[in-house]
Image: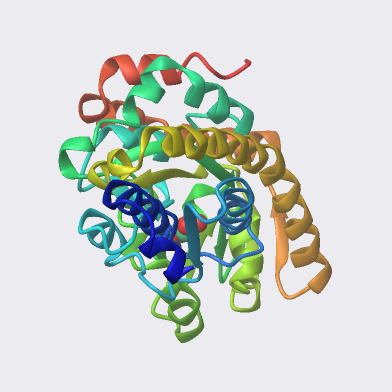
Length: 331
Ligand code: SIN
């Protein structure tokens, strides 16, 4: 090879070696960090994204997935994304509060009747616009992903809102979630997701909220004797990159990545409810926690207690966004 190269004219030689260099170029690396286990809607979505990218863009793009806060956790992952130390995340929407107040709409208790209503809202223009509200802060929204409806766990049953009085609940850092527990006469303690199990086990908090998949994958049922099935909200995610990195990807490759994201988002959306249903059954079958189901009157009492928060946060969220969100329930 070397001998035959020597016989080529200079321009041809440059062309050959240039192509060879281009071919030898390192693939674009996407580090995708998240805080949950792999066998959850988000964990599975991240792995499916990696699989499809490595099938369809082999040699061009490589994806490394870091689950369970192993690379970055709640405290530093968004900073790492903005500094391009990691190129993809899917934080829950509550965690974007320092960058935009408008996403608080997703935290408002009892605003959405079920996950289908949340998904309908995410397809609306007002919701699509929210994907790009943080671009100036170096956060570029690519898609919404969902987990499941949130339940309330505690060291006692909570059939009535007054039952939560005096307890301390671990929350995500969110003014809406803090107000939700304050309205119950309870204490809200913002903690990173990775610290939830220890805080419940040690007793510094006595309750928390989350979807069945997070209860099961974090084994929270082993430190919470009761789960009250309130379905009072949901855990939703935004798949994000940073705009400088994302727009630096060559157009054709980026278009393929965005098509993959669309496909994966659809799959995450289709499977999330099944995963939560599976985990609900597993938690109940394990028998470490007791299920507290609400009667229609109890559910209405919970809702009535929480609904005033919608008005409190309407100004920050925007009346137009609130209006759009309030048209998606099928009641
Ligand atoms: C997650 O599902 O990403 C974690 C949510 C939480 O912090 O409770």
